[in-house]
Image (cartoon, rainbow, N blue to C red; front, side):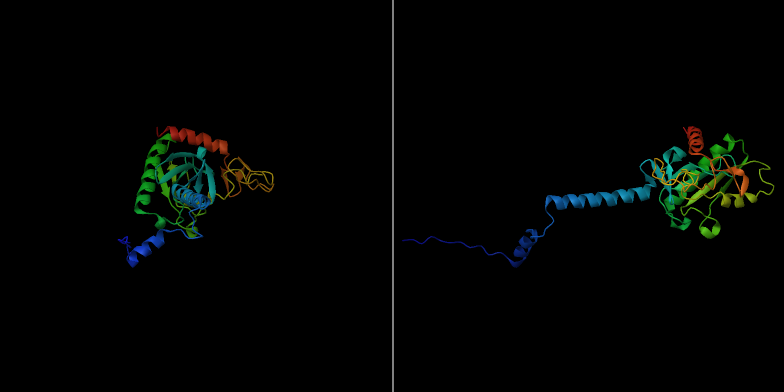
Length: 243
């Protein structure tokens, strides 16, 4: 009687290791709920990263700690955007802001540096004749000691006319005084009732207005805090100049 032959295949140690790595353990995260949780967390990180890089959060743009409604932005590029000013020093005083939220000029990449200045040049060349000006001031305050009130790189672009200041260099002091605070742009500091919020999630004021819309500011009788409607209307006009 012939014996049946039994053939046994031996695996190399490396093969056993390979198989072991592919087998899920008792606490493996291959469960659908685990995969779903990881996808949600990954998507949240991606969204936060895109918001930081783009400078935009839904219908708002990010300007340091300030949320700017898209209605107040009149031009944008891949790396920068232009917004109207809450407290313009002269007619046509606008801000050119880097999309990525960084406080210092040295934090910008070479591409961001070129883009923000190219956009400032483009905007200045267009708004200067629109406001009947014959010159322009381009100013950047790089850090708090230089007068920067919003910790986010931005360039002030101001159309200038002869005699708009008794001393032309006075404009830099006025630029420093024109800095805005969180809440001012969207009405938080205009006497809103405590707890009120606008559609952008900015909280209401505490009932003690420090600068009602249209009211002359103490530090400069010629400069006013503008309403959201006024800023939006100017943004529409300025946007039309670039079409």
